[in-house]
Length: 327
Image (cartoon, rainbow, N blue to C red; front, side, top):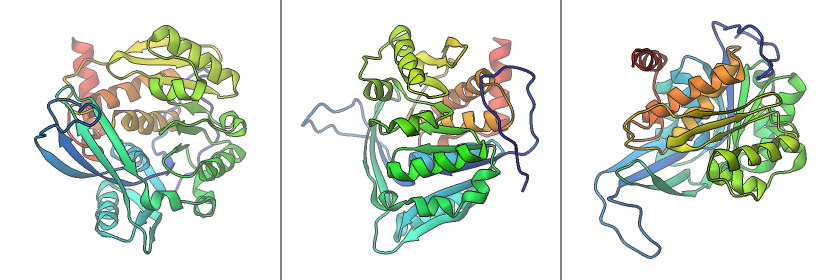
């Protein structure tokens, strides 16, 4: 495996693209049980749904598969349950080229499960039972210390214990490796963890929970990003669904509209964004270049049902970019 030096995004300068990059993802794996519905149910309401699909998901697993399908060498640090869902998830990682040497089966524990309803516009509501994800520990992360230290980027989310995320951030920081945190599901975070984050990728709701500020448009997203930057985060990208995303770092404040697509399921769009952002940064792209790349990947992912099954390949992303440039 190739070892890569430290790289901080948003510093400008010439882009250096590496032929091979390693991404380490520390996080969750779930089995997603997805139902198409004519609309999102109201509180206490039963809605007659349509098509049902059962697909591998979980924010960490989604991000790992997204990066692997883009050609990165991906090591996943995770825990599965000792059940059929866990077996199916592991088989899918191997099919998608995600390394599983740090994926541990946990006896007597169920795998994580997500219950998802999706409306015709691709909007969704999700309830997650974490199962084995809640058992992922700092010791599990320390087992991967050598791979973390030689990675081009490390990615984590909040569907696993915060102390586990803190351990990953510390190891990455000490090795000079960019640490990307998708703060979902959102919660207040320790100040020391925020200071170790190279790039934070909240959506509007998550940015609001993190900052206590209303986030509903470009202006309020920018204010929330300023708050997060003042807390020590290196850079912030507030993803805003079909509207686009706001990018903010020490020198840049830019709103980028979303690529136009016909969305059918936005379930894993945020994970597609974060996983592909990590690939771009690990390849030496600037923060803006990597974010633009991630925006295209996320847009493409919404045109298909499912989570990991919706992640596009590098060839598909390149073809999509060519189409956009011709329009």
